[in-house]
Each structure stands twice: as structure tokens, then as C-alpha cells.
Image 1 (cartoon, rainbow, N blue to C red):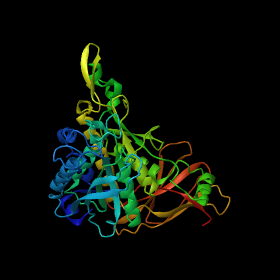
Image 2 (spheres, rainbow, N blue to C red):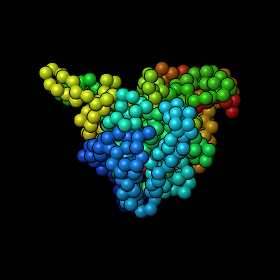
Image 3 (cartoon, rainbow, N blue to C red):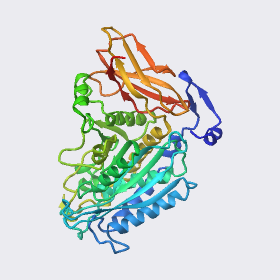
Image 4 (cartoon, rainbow, N blue to C red):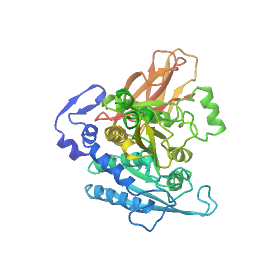
Length: 462
């Protein structure tokens, strides 16, 4: 939290553990500015490019992937103009050589990247991503010419990124937020893969990636356009959040430790998913996360996988009740109950209010992470002796505004953290119950009450 913003928010209330709560929460302020009308307009404009296939024509100013990329950049530039110079926008291009699967003749991958620099010198090296792919496809993934509106897959996810950039451009997050619109997703996750590999080679500290892919239609086969009836309200109340349980590509030693402490459900990506769930609950958002403890849907993939392969924590947002008969299909017309209905990945199937709700969840989670201290390091449960209590130790977070730490725990069969104990500014805490019966983790917090994602406790002799 910057001194200027703290001064502007004059009213504070004290709470336990040295935490203070701001009377105007920066997360609530940001999500209040998300516009369903803007979401609607953005999806419609992306669809208007006819196709956004990665191999589509790159010379037209009105049709194809490059025309769409240039428009996205223009919109992000407009947002950046409100940031006081803290947000930069660029086109990122990669040359793919011939022989690549789904790009046999090679070609160019174009991403659009917006970077909102963190306001705190000791936190801005940390990066948190909001991601969506803007390329699309019809029934034939190798056909660059057919109409491929891609409204839900994935103009919806691109809209989350763009609307998030618009509402956060004037914010002052302590860590850096990156708004990434990728192409090449339908050709094998290429845009995200190349970006993540470049980031890894540069040594960038990407601490969390929120990938949004197919987040605009919660109704599926029950959509009112198809049934002519109102859809059940509960279907539009949540978004699925997929996360892998075991970290990608662990060493044999790491895998042995995961097995020995039963940590198969506690990767950094899984903690990221739990963090999103906490934020959605705490801010009582209209669209709640539904945690799905699985990498992704069967037989499908997403850009978060590319970040996982590069060693970064990442999750996927995806709406419930997918209708595969409308994804990756040519636009056509069918008869339903005596009515002519256009089907395909069309904008009329995207619910703008639902999409705005998913955007608010993304914005809330990304701001919460960017304003929190970095998670503590080397968190471990001490197992030096046979005892019936539990002692945890960790290394301090480096940010100067770190106020303290909380130890959390849950039953071994519980999906979420259920217990919490404030450790103050200490880096060790003992609890009077058996270490055998629960899982432990530790998170940091600052004076404004911002909490980091939990770090799962490994085991050590000291």
C-alpha cells in the first residue's frame, strides 16, 4: 500500500496481530469499476474480426489475428494512458520454424503484453499474471480462412485480461501485474509457451498465473438461446478453478518427500487456487470459485500448462456446463423446437454479467496477491523427535511492510485450510496437537491485512 493511498484512506480500525483494516478496501474499489457493458462490447468487437486464427491473414486491418492484436494493443494503450506512466504495452512476436505441429510452414506468434509496474521497490520484482488467448478456430484447426468467432473460446478470457487492465491501470499494486493476451493457443499453446520460456530464461519471478479460458457461458446446453427458457440461476453462480496437485517435473528426491509427507494435494498451484477461494469468499463476490483438483478438463488444454512447464504456479478459470457442440465448430443453423437457431461459438451465447463476475474474481485475487508480502520461505514442520505437538519454522519475508505470519492447518481429508494461529513477527510457532493428524502451512501478512498465499510445510529435522 503506497503512503499516498494510505493518507487518502483516513479511517482505520485496529485488529489483532498488528493488522489494520482500511475503511475503503482497494479490492472492493477495483471490482466496483468492472463493467458488464464493457465486457459485452469487448467480446463483440473481438468477434467482429471474423477469424483470429493464428495463421490467418496478417495484412488486413479489419480481419484476422494481427488486426485483432493491434486493436487489443490500442485498448491497452488507452488504459496505460491513465496509469501515470506506470503501465507499458507492447506487441511480442516469436518466429515459429517450419515443421512445428499445427504450424507446418512456420509463422509468427503475436502476443500483446501490458505490464503495470509495482509501486514498492522491494516487491516489484514479483510478477502476477492475468492471461487469456485471443486466437480462435473453426471446425478445422488448420483452416485460417473460415469464420471463427471464438466468443467464448476465448474472447471471453481476453476480455477478462483487458477489462482487468482497464480497471487496474490507476491502481498502485506493490508487486507487478502483467496482462497477457496470447495467440497460438489453438496451435499448441505456443504463445504462452514461448512467453513463459522467455521469462524463465530472463529469471523473472512469476509468483502466480490466472489463466482464463472459456469463461463467458455458464449455461451450456441449457442456454436460453437454445431452450427458449430461463436458465437455472445456480448454474451462473460459480466458475471452475483447475489446479494441479503435484508440482511439475519434480526431482526424484522431491517426489520422495512429497510421497513421504502425503503432499500430493499441495503444490504451489493448489495453494494459489485455495487463495482465490479465500478471496472470493472474503469479498462475497457474485461468482464464486469452485475448486477442481485436476490440471484441466479431459482431452483439453490451456495456457496455464505452459507456465507450469516453466516452473511457475498457475491455475485455469473455466465456466461450468461446457457445450462442446458449440466449441471449435463452424457457424451453422439448426432447428430447435420449431425455431431456427444459429449455433457455434457466437457472442449471443456469452453472458456479460457472468463474464463481469469472473473478471471481478480475477481482479480481486490479483490485487490481493500483488499487495501482500511475498510468502515465507523454507517452511517446515520439525520432525526431530517423537512428540505429540507440532513445531513449525520458516524464513522471514523480505518486504519491509511485513507485519507477521499465520500458521494454518487442515485435516488431511479437508480440501481447504480450516484453522489459523497468529505467530506475530516470530519465525517459529509450536502448537499443542499432533503433527500426524493435520497438514500445516504458513502465510505472511502486512499491516494492512493483506495475506500471501499459503506455503505448504515440508518436513525437516530442525
